[in-house]
Image (tube, rainbow, N blue to C red; front, side, top):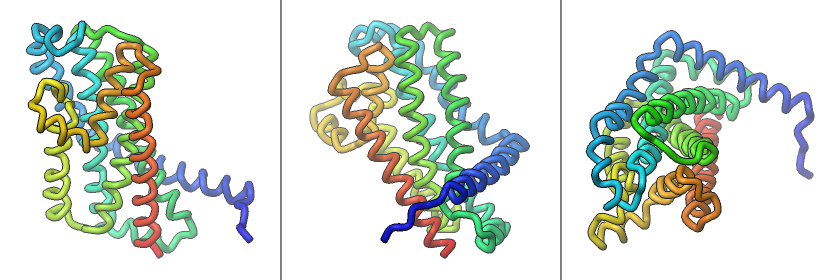
Length: 261
């Protein structure tokens, strides 16, 4: 017979999640370097690469170059900002923080979720700043669509943060984790159409990119930015975002529980 969690148990879980989130947020605010570094790269792309696309907007099938470009930068921010979240967990493990948390009665899922919420909040703020700056460069489109696009980005970032924490607990070494992440990041960057749509590439490259889930998410956010909410492209992007979000949380939670068993 299944045991249904009591209201007190659920309340305790969310309290524990908040405590972990608050501690992680304080650490991030005391040392905001990673937040700034994570935002600098997309801004540089926006400032230095965006103007090069303006004369090519018509050839790329877009009326506004930034409506095409900014969604890719958002996904880039969500992917690469969250994928490297696990490095902080390795530092905590080395400092004995994880070992100290193991002896507490706190939920192992709450220990992970509190950290992910910190990464999600950081990504949300970075996304707002990026979109705000893009308006200064000439971004136009559906504001509601941009909000939904940012939500998809945040969910993708949560999945990546959970997977990154799982990898961190598995490797427990920055020297191992860094090359693994870099080997994943480069194909994703090139095959997802983050900087340029894959439709301008050769046929064989388009076929290869069809196996990249993040490509559908990038295309969906581009559709949302233009105000196209109910299209096949948007539907597939939402589906893949939910799938990756669920998979990331499952892997992260399972690894965290196993590590702390």
